[in-house]
Amino acid sequence: MKVDNTNTIAAGGNRDSVRISSKNTYSSGLIVLDVDTMPFGCGVWPAFWTVGDNWPNGGEIDILEGVGNSDHAQYTLHTAPGCQIDTSFAKASTRKHRRRSVVHSMIGNDREARHAKRDNANGFSGMAFTGSVLTNNCDATINSNTGCGIRDPNPNSYGSALNENGGGVFATLLDSNGVAVWFFPRDSIPDDLSSQSPQPETWGSPKAFWASSQCPTNSFFGPQRIVINTTLCGDWAGSAYSSDSSCPGTCAERVADPKNFDTAQWKIRSVTVYQ
Image (cartoon, rainbow, N blue to C red; front, side, top):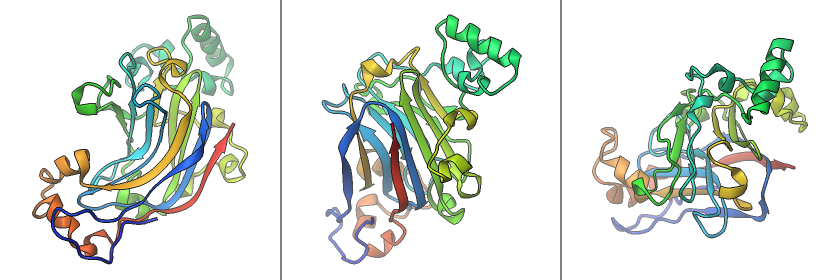
């Protein structure tokens, strides 16, 4: 699935691209993207995401997103006012009882199990995440719709770096505990995922997690439709273009030349939903 890389157009004109959406919607479940290559390059904004009706009230989950020549994936929520990242689940948190992974503790030792039992008794349920918090407030009506983003620590999680590494798998779990995203490079995909018998409780810490403690999923997310698309320039990629020294001229000028988009293509092995 790719951007047109054949036809020359006038600067400032529109180049053909593709956006596809699932017919089905999902209120909960595990969404798994297995991708070999993804679009990248100056002015290119690819995204694998989900969105509810009556945006932003139905919520939006950006599972794999970034712009230009980035090499780290970014995961972001866009919601109605009131949703935030519970940063006590970040790995750097000093609130150790809230950092612990309830899912992980189910397979850990007795001490971990006691922590999980205590955390659940206190109303804390979720998973410590390893990504870096970029913005904390998920409200799409403020901050130019920045949303609440978390950056993947893996430099092979996006763009050309991801492609050169053989791609990988992005798995997103949406349930009453919150929203969690894992990324697995091609050589580190869990066997249970490869055999289509996923067991998220064995995967360890996700890259991103938005706990229901500060963003209840049943309040901020309606049934989600899966979307894959590639935007050229646009609000984010267009504004980022001028600050990237590797990108010449303007974004509008770049769109005119089809040769600039030979790498703007998705090669996807599968998209699978488990419920």
